[in-house]
Length: 415
Image (cartoon, rainbow, N blue to C red; front, side, top):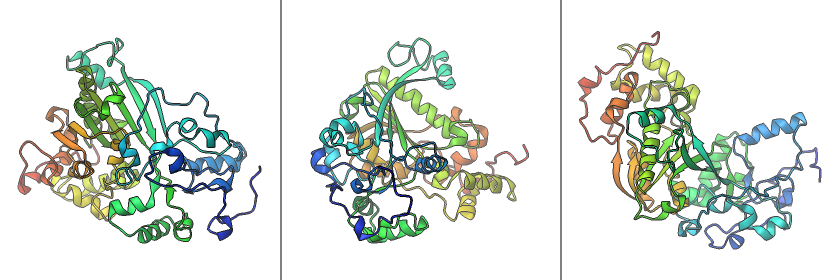
């Protein structure tokens, strides 16, 4: 069926179709819960606001406009199922545990077999695969004797064997509102306004309770047996990491993001080698969810200010440019952990009290908190790390005084 060329507003009452399946969030049986359908091959089947693939939906639109992508394409999901069994866990049917992802978005042809075979264009929002990681710092850790080649977790060529899980965001709006302690109507109105009216259904279709927001996805890397994640008797080492492209990918030394991430990977692999399991969750929240452009502007402001890039003004410079020190909130972050049935984290790699508090508040026990070793902190990142310690971030060591913070300086902008 070729899509009509003229625009049809889905906010019209005439766009409520009987073929649109209801979603009963939190129901244990996936067929009774109902699939999330955000595809456009048949608009009569849609039961969610937005479309699949998050921010990549815009690229899909450009490809369609160019004529290189068919609007009638339905993905062939044969042989795409997970190589590792995942769940279901009690958390999958707890509407208070998971509100920002769809646990039944995994292995669609299995969970929604009859509907999928009947022609419903149900698309996965979770995918699992396996891979090898090749990381220079891991090679160095092996050479230094901190990590051993065992042929199972760390292979002979120094690769690390992992299971990877990708998650697209799926927001159950009543649950999101409850988690953030706001009125659902207010939440929907603000989302509508702050996206420039991108999704009119937010304010015109209160019957649509699920949204596929155009934001970045989350990736999880598992070290060891993924099925051990739900066993609280098995040691779990975890790092929940927010994206920092400059450091994570290109190795910029102004922050501790890559060193913290790599140290978490190293320790996760070590834990798996001694019979435990490791997990790294990578969230797309670039620049404290302010974006990379804002982050670079802040860098310039920090390094040009009178007195230089000082730990004493670290957070203030961000607020001057962005209007807030940090636009992130961590209340939705634990949903990924609950997908795996996690109830206990033995070693949490994070300085962030926001992350720790969100995890504990969600019902997951944290035994130990791990900070980054001092020798792994780049010189220019001392500004960041000391400012965070002084601001109350987790720190098992000493915290500098206000006067001492003024002496912690980064490089000038021209060096």
